[in-house]
Length: 523
Image (cartoon, rainbow, N blue to C red; front, side, top):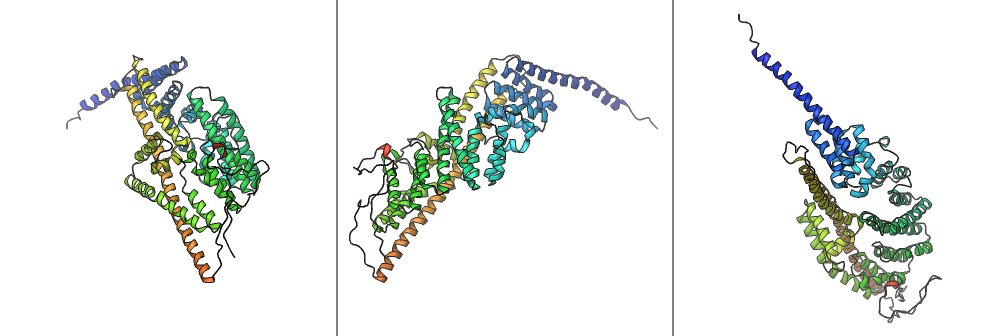
């Protein structure tokens, strides 16, 4: 019996022994490169630091989480936040507490630059309260608060938002969220106080950022919009409390040049309708016929006009408004329906639609663009478009950085760190288009559904006019043959004056018109 051969076993052992020093050397090289990355970071060579940390991962995947965290820090200090956001997310997903806590020091800065929606779900899912330092904890609580409010839990949202530091840049936005949550929960006095503080804080940010860099100017613009929305929240809360006179004055404090005001004017008209002040309702709505407000898309304006005429039993006027409504919006509704159906699974097409609407004049005659402008011209979508441009700038900056730093390994792919950043920035562009496309699509669906509901309302108004006409014939109710327009002097506040309309619209008068129609209702 032959003894078993030991040749293959000896060869295997030898190969393992030979491989072990090589593996140890590779591990040592990766660890050393990561230490170099940290030293470069401390020396202020941030992009080179990120590049060395990236190459360390290829040497030893086990240090991936730590390397991701240093790449994040390096790219943030190199002013490449869009690229950094990818490595920030990868660090959170790693589960490594030391690495996660290291990148969470950048939470506030990153949220202010790339927006909260990209990161909110990752923060909620992968981090905990104790992971944050005092400065960045507010951004986490803001994310939790917004998530809770979106889920319809106002009380839980308030609990999170209460913990936000008043020194945090997200604090004014948290005040608006908390005010909204309090109003939804019926805690009106707390809501008023939050909206008042939001107004004051936003005003300071807007004034401070007007002469600063691009980021500060963008934040100032957002603050102006926030201030207007907080004033609107304050006025709505007063109306909810039946403090109608105070609500009127609060509505008047909203700047007419803000994006919020055209919608607020409509709310103000509804408030008058709810108090049966139909002439005041019609007066506010007539402001939308001004050339300055021709851009406004809101089919409910005509619906409310028809309802006001119906309430005054001015059936010819109501019928004329309904016919105008049908002629103006039927084709737009059909075009939107076709676009949505043709691009149901293509969010990129919706994102591009939003950008095209933005590129057109605000006073475009294109009905679909006018509908899209209703939501695309708000700060959320415009910030996404701005972020898309910033990705292009980062791509050029990363290429400059990469070409100026020789001596770092290019990586097994042959493309190295700059090549990988190209893929990262392409990912970031896709996330922007996804967020923007989802926003435009959902908003378009909501507004199309509202338009269909408005068609149903106008149809009901027509039926109601026919019903009343039938009743008059059946019961032989006597109709007045004449009606006198402008014969009733409307009620006014002590800070308002009465002037007759001369056929011209003046911007400082918009929203202040009141009709003087006499009701033709009988019996």
